[in-house]
Image (cartoon, rainbow, N blue to C red; front, side, top):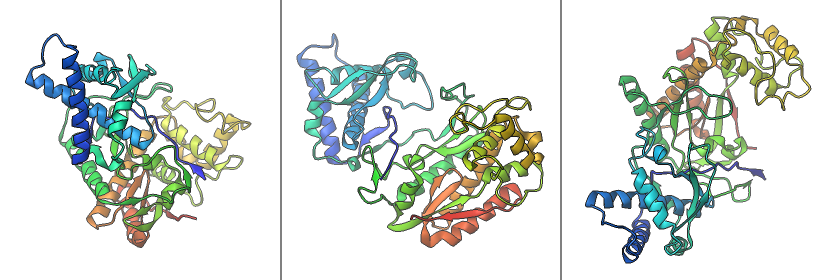
Length: 420
């Protein structure tokens, strides 16, 4: 059995009860907390109507996400306790009041209320104090009859994300931007893709086929598009679905609308895009078959030479993250072998063109997904790959080949992969 990698959950401020029974439970919990607040005279003044609604909205989200995590088995979520973080105006955060989030968190986790429990968490991700929060004993007593399907997310979350430059191992920061006709168009495309994803039924592999650290919600497959370098012509890959980070074997054992699936992948996609960018003729054979280098090493090094920006000056050592996989292999010899294999690409190496190539790749995938939607073909995106019901293999392959040629002027090679 292969493990399905767990992810670190962060507070989802968009979480909400969907069903009447879930709303009843959450409303009961909020009322119980407010009654305790009144009985113990914990406030010097009563909240106004608007402030009370803001408090209830924050408490509802905190309780809904805690319940969801409890039912899922992840138990805790991390949440910032920094006013600077929570009250910062941003297109990437919800409209919940940061002040009311902290007030509700303190009241709900009061030991005499015990609807939540929390303890200190790592600070670096939030830039200030944070806590790990979970359902408390009083909430657990209320939610035993509920399931993951009683909860969902509110509409309105931003699906077009702009990120800055990556610095070391820290994640790049989200960048605010002003909407234009382009960002509106990009957002409409992603929302259309998400609407299609929300309409399909994803069936999971049989119990016991994989080691799953927590319950997987098959509805939680909506995506966002992430652009890099503060530019909407850089990066643009689709992310955020747990399905993308699951092992390939897991994906291939899933079903879509009750049908077994096939994975269709652009073979050596980055190699083909690089040759298109260089205006060079694509050589025959596997672009990652380089003498003396294992294919995974060759593939990572090829990408590094395109993504690293050193004004054309070559790397002199293995990039961060490659030292272990390339242990015992001379970097100088490896780089020489790669450049000997792909001399036509030397002029575009070490100039950061990988981000623009990734932009082209992401545009191709979005084009493919929209074409499939038009044809009524359900599809799950995975970077430069799509997973579709097997009955749609031939039609999807044609769509992928035509889209690649339309964006690059080059032919493509689409490979097929089925479950064992």
